[in-house]
Picture 1 (cartoon, rainbow, N blue to C red):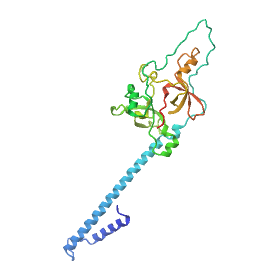
Picture 2: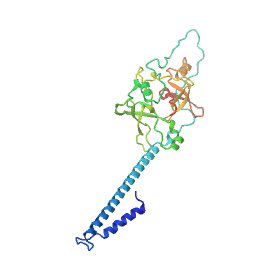
Picture 3: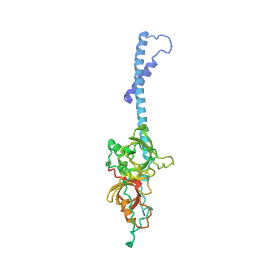
Picture 4: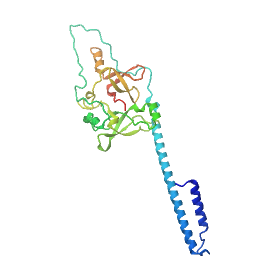
Length: 307
C-alpha cells in the first residue's frame, strides 16, 4: 500500500497530465506522438490510482468487519451480566420439606417396618463416570438420546473471550439451568439450548448451539418410573460426595458436598410423621459460609470437574 506522500504524488501527477490533455479534437502543436506519450502516462497513473483505491476499500471493509465482530461480542457479554447470574441470596435457607426428629421408641408389642426401595432399583443406572470426551458422553447417555425438546439440563456456556472477565466472574466453571429447544440436524451429539431466564429487556433468554460435552441432562420428573430419564435411573450420592446442584432461588449450579442423601433423610423420618418419601438432599455449597440447604434430587447431578 502506498504511503500518504506517494499517494499525493500520484494524484498530483494525474492532475498535471490531465491539464496537458487536449480539450478538443484539435491536434496540439507537439504532434500525435506527444498525445500518445501523454495517454500512456495518464493510463498508467490512473491504473495506479485505481489499484490504490481498491486496496484502501479492502482495508476499510476489513476494519468494518472486525468492528462488527467486536460489537457482537460486546453485546453478547452484556446480555447476561455476571453479577446477576452469580449473585447468591444470603440469609436463611429456602423452605424445604421438614424432616422430623426420630420419635421415641414404640412399645415392642406391635410394630411395622416400611422400607423405601433404594433409588436405582427401578430402571437402568449409569455406571460410566462423567467424561467430556464425546464418545464417552454418548455411551453414558445412550438410552436418553436424542434429548427431547423441553428437557431441562445443566449447561456449561462458552467462556467469555476476555480472560480477565472470565476469571473475575468464574465463568470457566459456570453451569446454568437451560432447556433443550431442538436437536441439530438429527445429530444426537448436537443441540440448541435456551437460557430460561429472560434478558433484562424482557426478551427470551439467550440460545446456544452446543454438544453433549457441555450438557448434563437433569432427571425428568414426568418420565415413566422405568425410563432412563427418570430419577430412579440416576445414582444416589452418599454423604460426603461432591456433587453439582442448583443453588436455591437461582438458575446457577455450584459445587456442593452431600451432608445427607435422600436415603439418609428417609431413615431419619421413618416411623415419624412423614407420610411421603423425601426426595431431597441436604447440601453444603462451596464458599457459602457453611450454610446447609435442602435441594430436590431433580436438581443434583455429578460434579463434572474443571475444564
